[in-house]
Length: 141
Image (tube, rainbow, N blue to C red; front, side, top):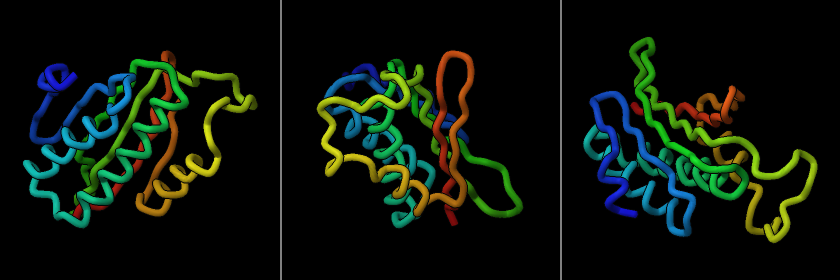
């Protein structure tokens, strides 16, 4: 799995990382994102928030969506404010809307959207042919 992530696309404005649909994927993606944030000199307090948002969005894709999933970090142009967009695109829901997810403990899951909402300046969902993209913008002072 680590060898697969060595093919990550890195430029000065974009970091793309595939999300393997396997146990341990969240920590692998977090390490990849942490390296990109360090390369970009993102302040540690902002990096911690970004990594938490990454964890929540990637976990959502692994637990609730069909593979493949891809994480993309992008610098969003703004009026003198550095904004980092975190996007996770997946192939869409793995279960029918309105049906419960068997085996998912509600005490252990269900707070991700609240966490993303609290940390992001903006966030949303785009449904498009072939999948769903969940995104969040964080200001990186």
